[in-house]
Length: 412
Ligand SMILES: Cc1cc2nc3c(=O)[nH]c(=O)nc-3n(C[C@H](O)[C@H](O)[C@H](O)COP(=O)(O)O)c2cc1C
Ligand SMILES: CC(C)CC(=O)C(=O)O
Image (cartoon, rainbow, N blue to C red; front, side):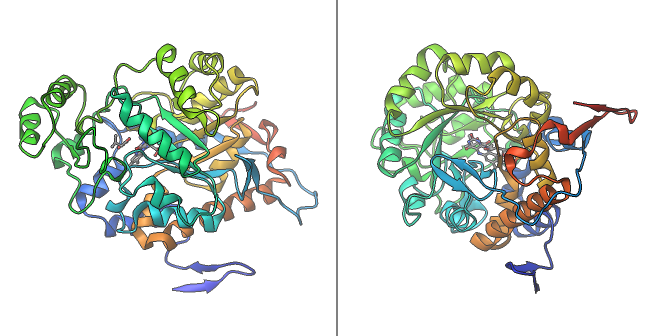
């Protein structure tokens, strides 16, 4: 069902909001995928609070300003992004739709937004980049203990024209996701963790989750062809989380001192180095001191440390600590154009969207991702217009108030 929106693409009358998109997607995903995509760690309280934090703020709209020429775009990595919104890296998108990350990338190009590709994508980074003609892409990295895997991946990303790497720093071990454990998550055939399929240093193309017990580690041993060192590692990793993925396991040894310098050397000069998963002012100072190019305030969509602060609540101290020296992006719980406005008003330069994109992909492949991005972009544009802001730079904390539990309203 479709109706023509004035001057734009047709509305999908079955799906006018991200909440409706989530419902459509739910019907199209098998249980294992739905649980993997939608779950948070432990009780899911951080997952929930990432979204509800937005309702603590209300907008102070200004009126009688000429709103006929609104510019929602921002500059990022030398290109114009149509809105301050990017697609966050999320693993294994072929679970949502057979076209997976390639469809997401095409939708991003169509919408004029940047895409983040997960290291654990089910499409190769080259397939995702091909045909995008320089449209900005960033590669999310898990820096493995075996540096060779990461080094190769970085070289490939440089060659394919990726603009930056996002080192994920909130995952020294995997958060506890109980539904994954219960479902004994397994990446179904024929899908592969595509970036490592041809990696001769390991056999990292299969993935099993849900194995936090020594028994399930043993279970996977039967499926694997890897070396003894690999099993040693898995056994060492096993009690720390519900996920095991061959030699490419979460790396508990990551540190500012040893790893950031190494990563910068590997990426320089073609790609910037960002860290994704910053949640405090203290780590923001360290990020600046270690020369990273930017940070993403993130708690991994509530999938890692449950009980961590909602990202919107963490944002102000981080913006203050960064003092404009490096860009500050944020993700987590963004489901409305007004959420994007509020995050920008609190000092974020840019926001990233995770699950809604997966829902779009599950709903209608590339078309569904385009729909997701269009809904958020249209809502953001409308919010800017109704709040009285013509350019993204106009959106400041002057446009927000905070409302506490008893209804007390304070200016920021
Ligand atoms: C299914 C799923 C897979 C994810 N995979 C990765 C990943 O491979 N690497 C990473 O850094 N973050 C990953 N994330 C976290 C996202 O990049 C992002 O931080 C989070 O989804 C933002 O929250 P939102 O889903 O509420 O928008 C994943 C999130 C989901 C939901
Ligand atoms: C393969 C996983 C480690 C991907 C991830 O980051 C996630 O599921 O949150």
